[in-house]
Image (cartoon, rainbow, N blue to C red):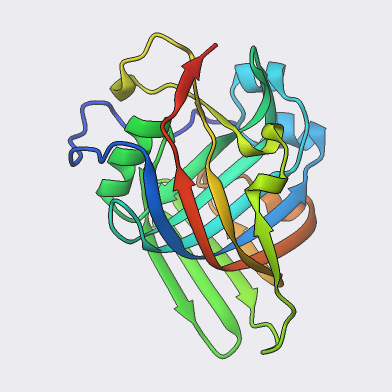
Length: 240
């Protein structure tokens, strides 16, 4: 059995720094991407999807990303996000950000205002050890622990670019947020990225309370380390 609770939200009355407007073209850093194939029954019962998401689920992988932005238009910050698949809108079926935690209020302000990324503030601890990378993200909602094993020094790297992916995987369709003051129900964004990747070894994924769904119970397909990468976020589009 899985308890389903309402999502955490950032109250619109919270005061954040003035958002830096899109586009953001100066993001770079490194990160880990883990891809899962969730069971649909588990997804409906245990992933804390909204009623709309359950009705509009269109399949696709679940993804977690742990990212350290060494440079960004809003200043350096850390990020942990989760995508639970693709969901149907009038424009097509696209991924949407399920949960996203960041380490700075500047990132929260920009992400929510520009692209409806419902960012929340987390306390990040990311440490490199002889064995690999240990990361813990904590908030009032609980904590997430990620551990990736250190890979051999000469692990094969390969170039990647979002330009080779389909629109269905490039676009993000989030619910518009109050601070955007838009009548349209969805905010569409198309981030672009390029860099180098290598396979990575996910050694531990653990989450408590309502931080992220317990994806460790689902089939893990692959993990990748992106280092280095560059990322751009253009001005968003709005629609139904």
